[in-house]
Figure 1 (tube, rainbow over the protein chains, first blue to last red):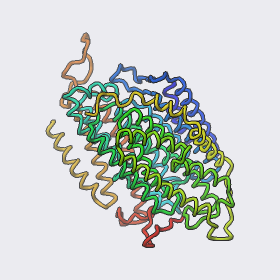
Figure 2 (cartoon, each protein chain N blue to C red):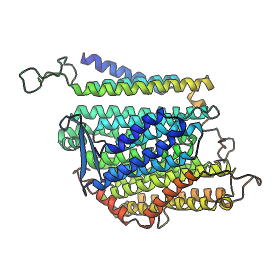
Figure 3 (tube, rainbow over the protein chains, first blue to last red):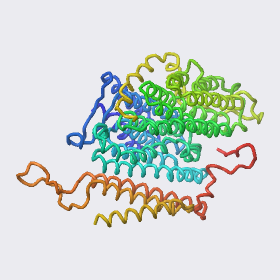
Figure 4 (spheres, chains in turn brown, blue):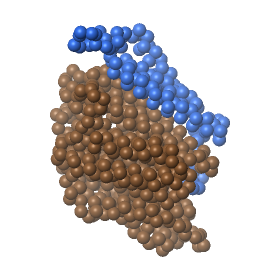
Length: 484
Length: 128
């Protein structure tokens, strides 16, 4: 039951919120996110060290019943996504436009489906929750139907739909073919069956299809075009939720499948490493071109996905721990930066760096909050980004992958360029219009950003328990005798 | 029966690829729907199709007859059909809305969320 709560709470709240009038929705959203956070916290504390909790639904014995399972990694990621949901719901509290209230049930649905993906221990179940994630995201992209932005929002939703629907269909085809070859859908059963030589060889092409579809969902080069095309049209809280979570969820599934369930050939991992490097570079170079804060941050998502893929390509428990730590860091920091971008917009009335400025003088607190997150994203010690990159790079250099490691370091420098651009143009230079009046920032929005910044600071200044937790969580990865 | 399923699956998949590669938004959506149909057939084919014997354990027997149909792919395909139908409806309404703003239905003409560059060096400004 404990296992189901992080899914059931937001799902029930989403249905309830759709029936409530506008004012009640946001309060319910905050309450539901808080309850989900508590449930996820209980789940993480109830987790036996190195073990897993599971629940078989439908009264069928394994491997036929639908299994939900959580280990430390999934419980930690559910907790982080619930915390992010809480921050985002708090942030929306201060906005009373029809758009934000219409978004609340869909955001809760998204939180439920993300938690369910982390819990899925069955390929088909995984596909179903991916579809729910897709449907809620599409609803959020289309938004409340404000006629001024409707063409832009519809277009973004269409571009997102075209590539992501293709991705989920490929997942479905791959799941069907894997079932045809192995006769199994359950992760544990596949782990066993996949080791039989006659099944392993037949499984390989379909496993490739599945991983390819997940790479599309994660936003890897050259399949990330849907991401910068759709994300920048979203309002800040929704953008923080979607931009913070979705690509990371796909990267988690890749890590789970490649690191624990299937034996992935070495050659594929080698290719994935180079792809990770190119993804990092493409994202960061694309961000360097742009002047719209949302576009800069959206392309940095692509770049950060590269680091996660690098951690998967290195294929060792230490690299998996680095990937997990980096994913947690990135969910928090990236979402916080999107929320801060929303506050910058609220203060100045524009997202484009050429039209804004002077925020350091008018909003010193916002400047400090931005600096904390920006330094974390770049990886300045001692910040969360530094520890995450340190864990990944140490493993890269230990495996003598000097080009991969060196490339990741260079990408860090280019990230610094983008962040200094936002700092210099948005905060440091004077506002291009001398008489521009500063807008009002609602208190709950500040509270949300402070909550996330606090988490980032704690994780950066006192990383020991978090690093230990990720090492415990991933100790069972990459030991399925695969990689040959 | 099996041959017919395989043939229709191949035709559906090939036609869907052709349609998905089109720039016309309606064709793209129809192509995705057909690919969804092909994927559903694939799920159905994955679990030894052909048997029409219902998977019910006969009275007195302990196990299912080996000739019985496999119920799992049928359960899976039902789920996939429902989800695919919901997404198809959404996509159709979406492109109808898009066509209201631009009757050309040309995928390349969709530039509202990513404005065309006006300056050779710097990106365009998108008004909030």
